[in-house]
Length: 309
Length: 270
Image (tube, rainbow over all chains, first blue to last red; front, side, top):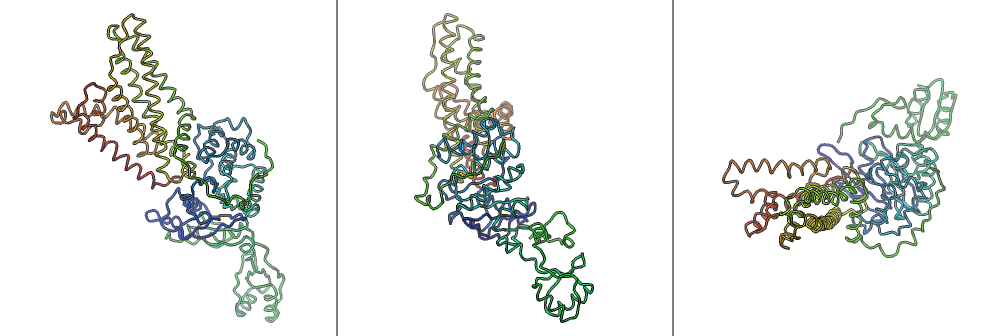
């Protein structure tokens, strides 16, 4: 289990990570989402002691990372697959991890097989590796100590579709056998498929967290009527907040049955009334991180500039 | 590259909540660091360079030295010079590659106490340094035996054990200087340039200063670490020379090493 409490990192005049708290539980895959520069990687670096937090703590099963006697056996970390000495072979890089952790030599071959790197590829220097091969090697390094916790930053980057599928199955199985998996990704579909819990970060702050079902279910009701303005007024006077969408529909958090009653009482004919389908992770992500997005998209309102804290 | 099935031969976490694992021993960190010095192409050629340079220097001594001059002192001097360039490079790259090649991301997550990694690197560097110097001296000794027999002069061992020890110390200090620049600058090209400034540019500049400033020429040993290390290569090192070494070493080596250690343990590894 990973517990992050009030983690904050300030650089001179700029807060990269601002009071971030969450828990990644055992047996679950926790997806860590956010736009570029939102503070995901900084948060992950603080968890493993590569960056000293300005304040706050991060613990692995209750122990600060730096106090783990042999961290590789407790936490598998992959922060940047390209951060390896380009002049070493894949086998040498795995060998360094294996010897540092004091594991039997056979683990190296075991891991190479697990991540599907061939004998031949293992003897090649890493500078000749594709990004996908580097990711596989990085995963092998993270898994070699058979840790209970995995912290992976963008592990699916550069993997081919089969590789992405393989990674997804691997993480699922890892969590199903009681492991804790925290992974960040820009590939929202990947996260949507594999994650049990989500933590969404924007501008260094957590903007949403919870189970995937909770977060994606908060879509409410969609209703259409020829008299949209009248319906909106009726809903509001019944105490139901609603928003008018560009496609001539209203959205409200209330149940469809309640909306129907209000419309009936007001004598307004409806042309459509249904539960808004799960907006999907992409919608939710764009909406939640609207203030910290670099690129505005037509799916949400005008970008509001927020001063950096 | 084929995609295999993802069967995890993983023991359930419940079965491994026994005794906590042993901390990583320093001996293991040192041996891993030694292997990291050999396993890259640059590391391999630097270490091979020790033997190659010693052999070339030895052969050159046999070929170019006046015959009646041939003695172990010449050979030791000839093989010693390339060591003062190669050993600091080995020391620098042992440290800086973690940053320049970004392998520190893995190294410092496997061993979060960075000072332990640095101490391990120091141990590895000194071990490699000692072995390199022994190899160089041995090659020089072989050259002395072979060269003297080739030109038909008696084999002379004209170096006292004390001088050999001094040269050992001087080479070790030179290597430490490279190590210090490595942890202070943490970039391979930056630290290598800094070392050459220290080893080549600075002596020329300070030499010029000494030739104009009488006071400085008398007291140079107190300020110029390069100069006071250089005194070790001569016979007859006295108490004043040791005092020079201690004084100049404290601000050229010890203080920068401390500052470097302090910044290494606090800096962000990206």
